Amino acid sequence: MRRLFPVTYETAAHAFGGAMEGEELHGTAGAHAAHALGDAARTHLLVNREWTLAELAAAYAYPELAAGTSGAPRSWLRANMVSTLDGAAQHEGRSQPISSSADMRIFGTLRALADVVLVGAETVRQEGYRPARARAEFAEARKAAGQGPAPAIAIVTAGLDLDFSLPLFTSPLVPTVVLTGAAAPADRVAAAERAGARVVVAGDGTGVDPARAVRALADLGHTRQLTEGGPRLLGQLVAAGVLDELCLTLSPMLTAGGAQRIAGGPSVAVPHRFELVSLLEEDGYLFSRYRRS
Image (cartoon, rainbow, N blue to C red; front, side, top):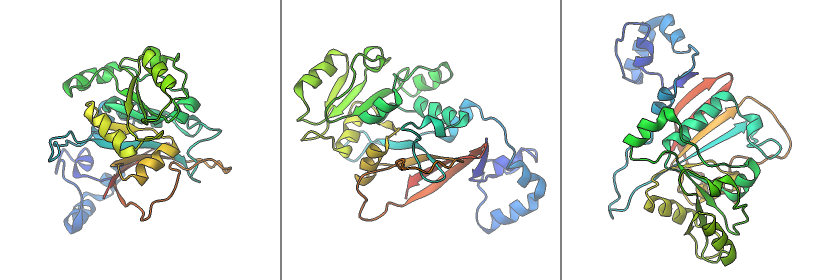
């Protein structure tokens, strides 16, 4: 793993005894300093090594958020998605074939930082979702942050066409949340509750209002939110304007075919602008973070 952006004095200082620790290289002064450090330092910035889980957790830490003016808890919703060079979010219906070991380390880290993982019902079915597991490496950090042993899984579903005998419902460390509409089938709601799921109404009809879903999860104490899609759900979140951050893995693969992009559904009237905040690389995979401008 190597960091391509942002470049900081701290990174270069490993080659020069800790000078200028922690300051970003920017502007004219930064350009002069980078030049003064010379080719050895610039080469050091590109050294490839395996990052520890603690380093990944620091790189992907959630921002500190104060309560809103109404006193309601504020949330931060980030998405984690993977795409091939030609824009495919899946291969043969699953994301695993276009992923990598580094991508999975980041996947696990993002889960370990989150209070809740928001996912669409079709993705649950296609990817064979299981409960999030507790990881010893993150146990102390989660406890210090006031989090449970693992994030809850929250499923967005209109018809609740889910297999409630699966471990996702029968044996999670924290109860699985089912987000649905007020007009959802009563028998399926009852089946979800019997299986131990917590059913939350987040829409007036059969479907789920993305903004209401985000607020409902925050009201449950799940303010550090992560969505893993799929593309339809991510498209709905983008259209609703509730996505704060996108963590996008660019896979060095070409698949052709008709696979979905990372976000589907109707387009927004005006494209939403995000800004790049970090970029990592390993084995040709690019791991980017973009935040809403």
